[in-house]
Image 1 (spheres, rainbow over the protein chains, first blue to last red):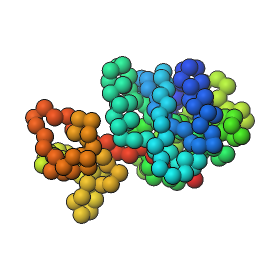
Image 2 (cartoon, chains in turn orange, green):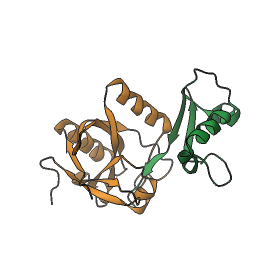
Image 3 (cartoon, rainbow over the protein chains, first blue to last red):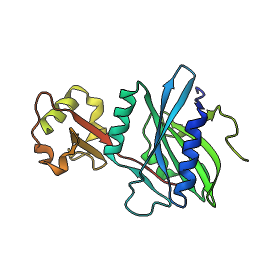
Image 4 (cartoon, rainbow over the protein chains, first blue to last red):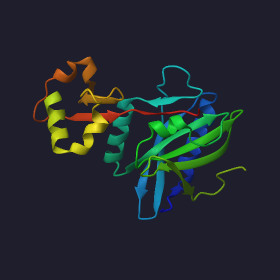
Length: 147
Length: 66
């Protein structure tokens, strides 16, 4: 199986972390953009998005269709690819749940940030394989995980 | 608008299970926009479109920790 790699720009990573810690105890969510070559996805821009979940935002996130459309337009306008979705897991490991898996779409990378007591802990990324199971991507960025 | 979606699915059969349920209804987590307007706020599947109308088919983006 091909190994998926993700190289996240420092500024994009910092913005995702800031969003995750600020949103705590709720889940944050957003998109990230960049480009990809044969081996690696280069994440250049992160875009925090309002969690539109109507209900318990501490364990659920939702992105409105309009926000998704605007993100696709942003990608087109800036000659970038919409590479995936990030969200946080408050007081929960940075591992995809069954709900995450059932809602995920092919091709997208899914970055998950765990946040405990308002401070981020781990950051992992995943992508669906052909059997609709998540496979972990390798993040090629320094100082990602504290464990 | 529904005619346009039906034609799209006829030309690209692989889209059918992603857009429609077994009863032939558009799946609830698939939102369809005519320009910036959700068709549910317009005339739903009977919403009129023209040759230059931009129709967006948007799946839901969601998830959660457990």
